[in-house]
Amino acid sequence: MKGACPCRNIELHWQLVDLSLVPRKCDCAYCSAHGVSWVSKSGTRLRATVHNPGYYSVTRQGMGMASFHECTHCRMPVFASASIAGEDYAVVNAACLSNPRGFADPVPVSCGYESAQQRTLRWQRNWSSLAKVTVN
Ligand SMILES: [Zn+2]
Ligand SMILES: [Zn+2]
Image (tube, rainbow, N blue to C red):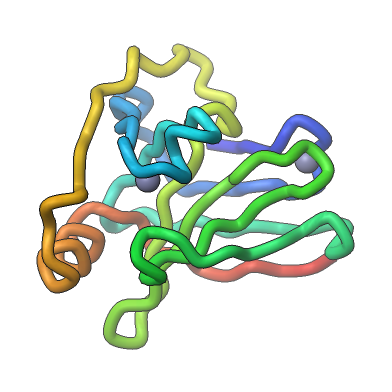
């Protein structure tokens, strides 16, 4: 599945054939403010290409454990990543993906009650692998 932010500064190539993924709407302050819902699938690989690094920023959110990769030109978080035990994992903003079938309505999730360890384990289980981010 391919994806990009609206101005296409950040493009995504995701080795995903499952079109039935249901986006998850996180209730943290950051995701609520941006109205983001996320999709991921374990065992799939995501690659991201940044065309203009001047409009690319990475901010730490989620108790500083996850990095949110934003296009600052469209002010949109495109994907989020976390490094766990030497592996990079990622979730993608459903609004940046072109799913030919369209995504289902997002389900709300709340993760405020989790411990840092629970969160890390959940990410490791559910998130996609982030192959790499190239600037091109
Ligand atoms: Zn953009
Ligand atoms: Zn969130």
